[in-house]
Length: 225
Image 1 (tube, rainbow, N blue to C red):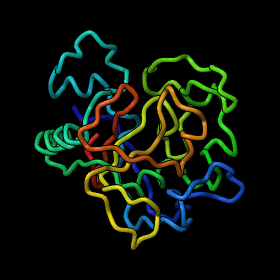
Image 2: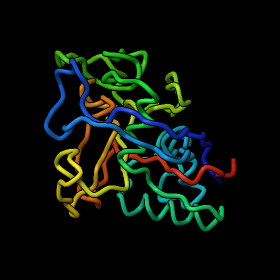
Image 3: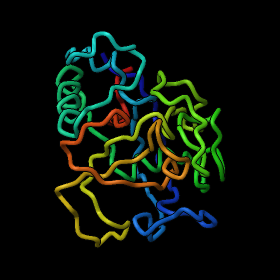
Image 4: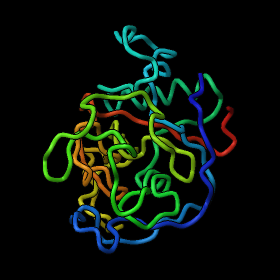
């Protein structure tokens, strides 16, 4: 029932656009520091069809259970967290933007946790930066690519991921929130590499459902395995 998860250590990390990243945009600035004061646990992969089916079938019985579950609204993702909390006795939720980026970077200060570039054997994406099609063109089972230094898979590519945060059009702490949209991170199977970067951000209405949009979950450090 509980998705496999791993401890993310407390620490400090880069927040937002990094030096020498030509694709940084205004939503990823100003750059700063993330401070994670307490360790937390995060699902190693995005929530899968199999994880979702443990809660309800929702018409996905013919899907590969190892695929990331998609076409899930922000509201439904939170409903799953509420169900998981009730069943496990632990408080599960969506990660904040800061938690997500910190976990994705895993101590790196480059555009990707793989370095300054990302290759097609390192993540599931569709297009090269010149627009040529190079990827598989479909969702892939979670965990097909090497994990980052924290042991997390699919932080780059396969599916974009909901976070818990309302959208802010920049990373300034005093930026007003837009409660009509939620922040999305990660980048999907049909994206360009620039949209897989650790600092990349997007905003979607919480009722949005897409075939490249999923989520992962976090809990307090003593999450049951």
